[in-house]
Amino acid sequence: MKPFPGAQFVVLIVFAVAVLATVTGALLAVVSTRIIRSVCGLALCCCGLAGLYYFLQSPFLSLMEILIYVGAICVTIVFAVMLAEPDEAPPHEKTALVAWWGGSALLGSLAAFAGISYLGLNHTWTVLTPRIGQGTVKDLGIALLTSYSLAFELISLVLLISVLGALVVARQGRSRS
Amino acid sequence: MEPTFQKPQMFLVLAAFLFATGLFGLLRRRTFIGMLIAGELIFSAASLNFMTMNRFFVSDPAIGQVFVLFIMGLAAAEVAIALSIIIAVYRNYRSINSRDLAELKG
Image 1 (cartoon, one colour):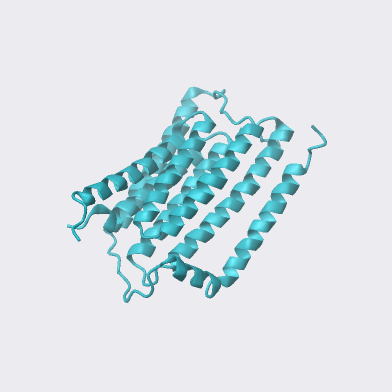
Image 2 (tube, chains in turn blue, green):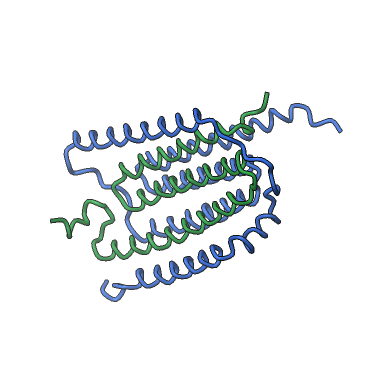
């Protein structure tokens, strides 16, 4: 069977859209002044990441990325935005200090980006052979319930304790206000 | 020639970019929710790096996926705790600017 004409270009365009969504989402999440826009940037970035995970041959993880990050984490942050008053007040210290701090943050993050990219691109990675398993959902489920069952149980315990802790912490002081 | 998404370089550079933006946001933001969002970006960078290694260099490609699932679970737990702390702080101080919470500062 012959493939659809120009199929590889379509795939490349989808990949470019995923990369672009990740990059613009990350930038939007960091530089916008309104917090709600930055939450939307985080959601966009996570959708792009889900596309990237699909290209990395794990559709299950891309589904989980959308479900957990966009569906749970971003929605929870939006709730906190509603309950608190998160917008940044204009800085009341000197503008020179603010500019200096922002510039040094930009410089530091650029240095981290350049350094990590240099390390990643110039290291000669060795590919471990032979490949066992395909990383399908079935393999993932078997790995979760055999080799990683202790970690699986522990993560459920961590989630339970975090839910209880969140309830306790957010409940304290309710009678005071 | 192989297309871009079958080589690890693009993904490694993207993970480094995500980490750098997260670091920048963590340093520059002045409210706790903004810092939390930047922290999520750093988590995503780590996950993307794990997935890249998992796809290209590892013999059993289920391990990295399990790791990323655990990272997602930990990120969800962290967000729940951090947001409840943020709400408790807002109730007491009427502000979540990190500058205003300087009561213990000597």
